Length: 160
Image 1 (spheres, rainbow, N blue to C red):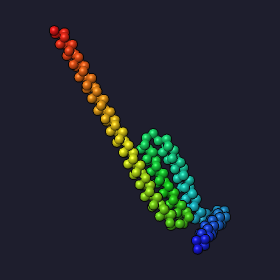
Image 2 (cartoon, helix red, strand yellow; image 1 turned 45 degrees about the vertical axis):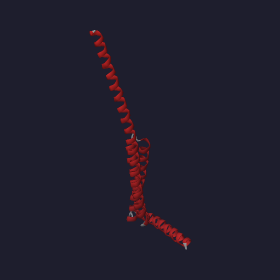
Image 3 (cartoon, one colour; image 1 turned 60 degrees about the horizontal axis):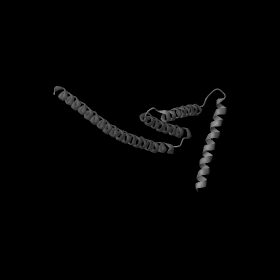
Image 4 (cartoon, rainbow, N blue to C red; image 1 turned 30 degrees about the vertical axis):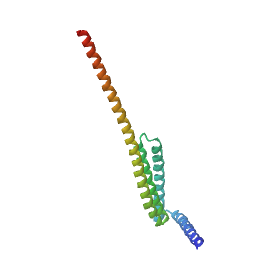
């Protein structure tokens, strides 16, 4: 049963490919079939999205800050969702839209978790820096008090 379903799917896909090659041969006369134009536009969109994903991957690797990396990961997820939707139209498979929805939820949760981890690490670093600042300011105050006590002792000795 499963083998029959796979064979039917394979035959359907190959039939579509044969039909598209027939459209290409018919389009040689100068009149382009609407399906051929649509396929060309969809392929152009897929290539453009692939280029943008490459740029976003580079940004996520090189990004100067963690926020740039988070945004680029979110952009990659969004562009993959768009690519799957275009693929759904190109292959005329409705189930890929469901895959888009699931991928959108997973991508959203990924960005939320990464942002939570980032803010948690940021707050820990900030608390450590704040504690260091408190210690440093306490040391400065203590040094200032010692300096003022020494001056008072010198003034007291000079007056005697």
